[in-house]
Amino acid sequence: MTRREPPSEEAFNKLLAWLDPDRNKAAEIYQRIHFRLIKIFAAKGHVDPESLADETLNAVCLRIDWLLANYSGNPALFFFGVAKKIHLEQIPKNSPLIPPPPDNSEIEARCWCLEKCLKTAVSADERNWVLRYHEGRGRQRIENRKRLADELGISINALRIRVFHIQARLRPCIEDCLEKVAE
Image 1 (cartoon, one colour):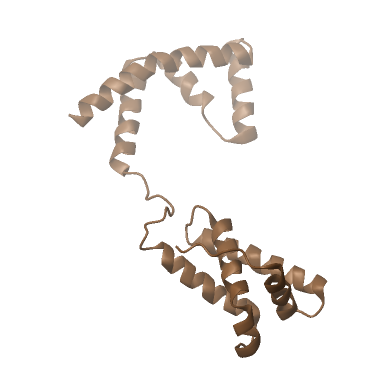
Image 2 (cartoon, helix red, strand yellow):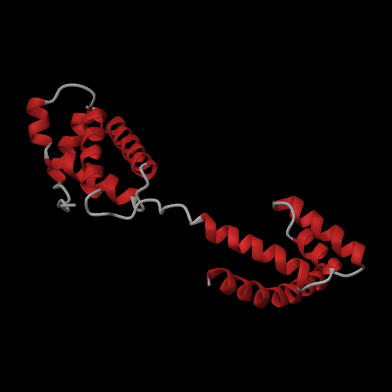
């Protein structure tokens, strides 16, 4: 992508006047367009949508004299057209977009090894504690952990330590299993 120089103050003032004669309204329109451009670039998977939105605004601002003489219609539409071109400029350069989804076979292997090790490397009680410790989300997970600690007659901190030690014993088993699966 060609980096465009930031516009001059004069060009920027002309751009605001083109958006609306009332400078405050023009500034609001400018901010809405900028926000919308960020959303557009983010939706297309660009890692740095803010920079691309700025690049779009700069490109339009640099053409302000031509726009004043030749363009009629909704200014936002012109910005969006320029944004589309800037997006297309990014594709040949393989700019980082949203990374591809992970290889499911690796995830499946990890899950299979975890299940195998939970059955063979720890006792049934320890397996139950680890599974219950990680069960739920947010507030529910916290409540589940409190309940488990109460059932075991230990503090939350003691439960954390106990689960940490169990996980430390599981880790080598899982790593060995993954090495065997990879062979």
